[in-house]
Image 1 (cartoon, rainbow, N blue to C red):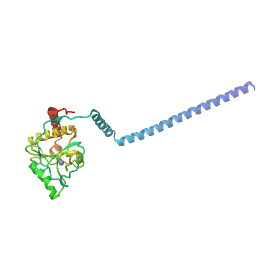
Image 2: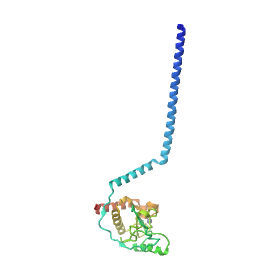
Image 3: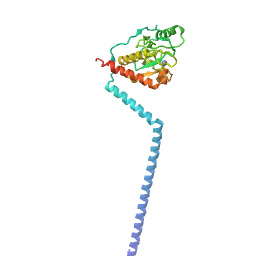
Image 4: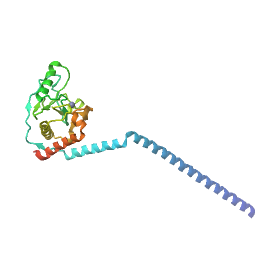
Length: 254
Ligand SMILES: [Zn+2]
């Protein structure tokens, strides 16, 4: 091979090497672009699905679940009120319309109501529930009725369900409150008895005050109307129940 031939051959080989290198670089570039594209698409899809799930709600549920877990681990213990409030036991006659005698397996809350019948007394409301066994007009009742003078009448034992709170009849106790007028505002006597009764029940059934709810919180019904229209007054009521427990409650004996 002449030196001229050798030079040409080397130049040819060098060109070939350069071409190969360019091709390799091009392939790598295409690979990188493809990977990036796939990644962006997948990322976009996950974002869309996350939006569907509503991140705020998911977070709230998580917090709620953690709270519950913490409460269970710590073994939530409500204080108990030693002094049983004065109440008159006037149990309804067992009947399918107001006292079906269905067992209340577990008490997870207390639901507050108003009678929506201005000026009526506790005993009159109790009589109305009793009358349903004959009139068969509707299914209605309540564990307790608090009257205008603060008197309390028990209509159903706390081992049985009442017909008061729709979907929550199966795991709550119900308290109906009498009121003087359409505003549904309770008299001071009714209010004081309601606070004492609710606090006592929270202690007896180991319920935190957060589990004291309005009928409104179950179905959206305007009951008890004054506490649906006055959210602050409702929060004030719960605070008064908490204060009552803090003031008069004691740690339960093991
Ligand atoms: Zn109600």
